[in-house]
Image (cartoon, rainbow, N blue to C red; front, top):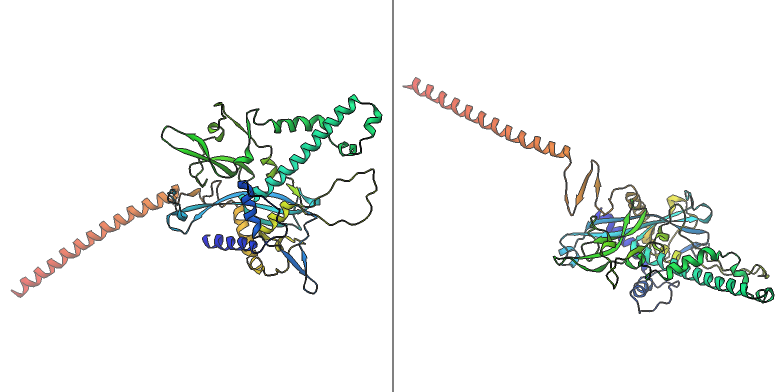
Length: 419
């Protein structure tokens, strides 16, 4: 398994060979911006070869992203002292993966053919997905607030003034009776005693210390057999050692000393159950009252789709993915390792690891922190082997004693006869 993970990591990492033209312009004034800039700085556009060496970008416009599973995997780090961290008392490191699919827009619910299956580290997935969902949420709330204000102004003005608004069409499908209250709750989240759970997806120390000087850390983790992502409590700064006995909300307080609750409103949109998370095609709003012409516009792809597709390990050919790359321009590493990626994805989906990343072996035996617990059958076999060994040792001693006595008796008789 260590070899498979190493090869898989190489396959995924190779996808970051050259600069990506899709990379967004980011500032360096926030930690998230720095992470995103670092991620996209070395990304490489994947292309398919068609015709006479004509390069074409992979067309994702007819696909949507569907979250499939989240999974932690603990593996031997391979470095002295657990990867160079002297504070870690284990030789195992925790890898965090998310499996997702590119499904045809028309079959998000089933997604059983003409799809691609992909694996990417959790941080990359959440960075891209939360960034996209945050942007959509802000746009929707801006539109909702504008429509709410226009409705209030229209109620106080005459009909002629209302007809002069050229942007009134934007509010035709906006239900301000529901969206306004929701957006107000999001805006006033902190005043209402809540914190956005998406702010704790990156491992970070909580502002808490018990009577023994112990500190705790919060970070994203897999839950409900990998079907959900939640915020958990960990005892190490790498967020590898999950403490199931603690609830993160019990260790979060505001400046006044009151407990804070977590809002999963945004985070839960990254793992929507039974539906796609985001469409890859960006569709611009158009005024239905105007003639927009029949001119073909350049297709724009959702940045979330571009980032995740380029950063992921790919399993496409076995699922009939029509847009899958037949060959790679200077990118044949993933072609050679596609079978390895498919096998690894299958092993994660098969339940070979538990929620914390420990290997689950048949018979209920699980590895724990590099050691193991023993099943009842194994205990019986071990006891039987020990008792059997002791019995055989006693029997061998008895035979040795009898043979020794018999040899002495024969020598005595021989000595008497010679006399």
